[in-house]
Length: 373
Image (tube, rainbow, N blue to C red; front, side):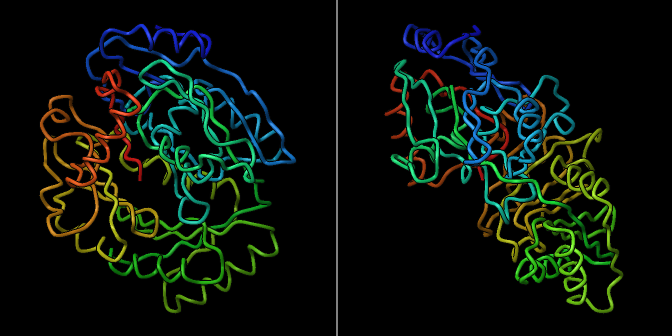
């Protein structure tokens, strides 16, 4: 089923007598439960774009590339830097803006600009009773019902089917640069990233790539400011093997690789996404049993490549955090679970919300692989 309008979607949901497997662009490793496939790709188009107000309203099935092209023409962007999962999970299709919001997909700039949910101003969606719900607004000052807007970001389609989203956008900076440190182990790298993020030099990306022996700190802004801040940032690491990467295209390519976890593309094994306190990351990384690791968000996000079927969560006992199985065989997803088990109190809240918005359990079989961290 591929509705072309919100009313048509609402009619389909209201008349459904069994589970629905909601599908956007099919690029993010969605684990589809039983039921008829309901595609959102027919709900496309930019409803409103006001560059002066930094506001974009777009239908949920619109390809992300279409959104980014429209923004780029006005020198603007989605500041939360949404990841493209296709290279990592080996999928085709085209990512949709609704899928980005439903999974709260947020890239390296999350540490400075916030997550997708922080840019979300308003939503329209069809709940499990087939009702069209509108919440939030189109500008930051209109925040009626803001909590529900936040709730939909990262809900992974469990509460309803998004039909339209309103987003805050930001200007593209004049230039960007990266300070690359070499020769650091995981503990030293997390310490260095924490130093950079705690400095006054406005670091917008902090990642550690062990396979390349690189610890990377990104700075963005006006050219003169970037040059000054890059030099001052380097002074915080005397005696380190540091490289100033200032070519904008090279910097963009580097951080696109971090965003999309390029070091794991084409490699066999399962891929896990682990959210943890940065201070706990080095010790946890040693216990994960991973064949390869990559750190983002200053150490708060660990990407781990493990042997097929390996239960990475078993190593997390005693460490606060959660692990999402992003890429694995269907039987591994079934055996280990895609999402980290919720504490009992949280599970009760989750169940209450699902029963409120999806009383007939139409969407309970749809689970997105990327966690909503």
